[in-house]
Image 1: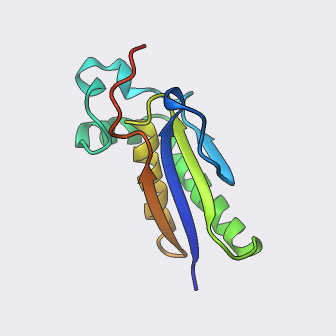
Image 2: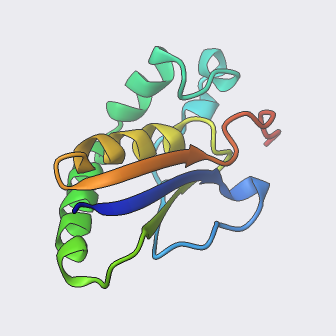
Length: 125
């Protein structure tokens, strides 16, 4: 039976990270928030997903994370494994990357994605 992996996207500006076995911090990566026409959009929008997925280093981070989770799933005890993926506001980078990681896991795990802060208002910065 494949391992259950829970992936939670969140924004650091909305509170502390959720409890997790692994936390990915995407704040060092280019933020779509700084692009005015993307600011009010979310990862539900194609333009945001394209902006995030074309950010230098993101696809490597996703591939490395999937490979790491594959290795961990072989050695950890049974039970769900929790991954928290965070960015500043939780509307752009974190949910996009969380979904991409889940897509990479489906061949060996049962990923379940939730977005803690996707529907929260844009954070004024």
